[in-house]
Length: 300
Image: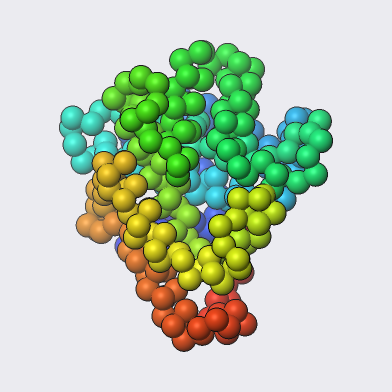
């Protein structure tokens, strides 16, 4: 990996299978970590989404897809690494790292259709999908024999990704699981909004939400117009307050990994928001005009 060009590598890792980087960081954080477990989970989740796993149909969601899940796991590994490098008091145990990454892989699986499902579309499971994700994770943990504590703690961690949730109301969990929840909750937001295809993906997100019956906007254009407010009034508050600024650990990750003292995720988000504001002001209510400025084709 070219350490002289971290911005290039940032985009490259967002576009390609990030397993090698996830494993590299896991080993840096916990030298005794069993990397084989993550390889197996990574492959199994890929099979879930492709329809190759016996119990699941192929995913058809264009926004909440395998790539999104993998990018959240990558961002989670980076945040864990940043915490590990940043503060000697934040010791990440192999058990906590495993639970955090497992929860990250499973956090959106609740939108997938099982082969026995009567639902016609995975969009029907968007609302409250976290509970279904936890159910699938519990089944997987039992099948693999990981232990009841893994199911219990991963359920807590997945609930941190629910934008409507208040972790203060969750069942008691240890400080380490709180940190893991803050990491995965932060990673879910950062990975989406820092994506170089984020703006092109917003119409796809609108279509998913509309089909899933959870849409709060009248059009894809309206969702795009409200994205800036969503970032400043919802996302930043959650990153800062609910997740205790855990996202700042990304800067420590890049400082250690690439010798550059910057938070590339937040920089990319700021660029996305500034560009979105610019083209919204230019195009007013013309969705066709927006298409002239948003020409990247998101990977499937």
